[in-house]
Length: 78
Figure 1 (cartoon, rainbow, N blue to C red):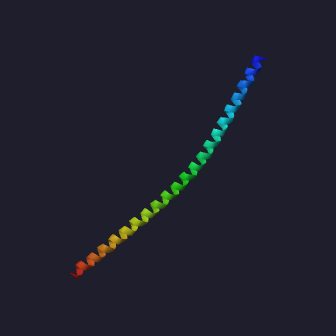
Figure 2 (cartoon, rainbow, N blue to C red):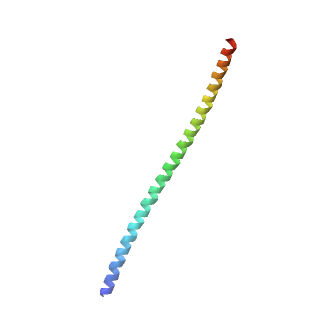
Figure 3 (spheres, one colour):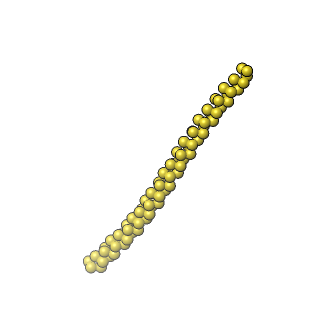
């Protein structure tokens, strides 16, 4: 009889441990899902920032060309 009670006690402890581990796993899955969503959001923001940087570099180059053209025109006048 003692052996049965010990086995029952161990079984209950194992079931409790299993339930706790399952809860932890569910929490980790939920955390991972939100982390994935945040990562996707950050990647999108990075792509937007890179596109903006490219546009700014293009504008800067166009401005340089305009300034160079103005300087050439002034030299031609001068």
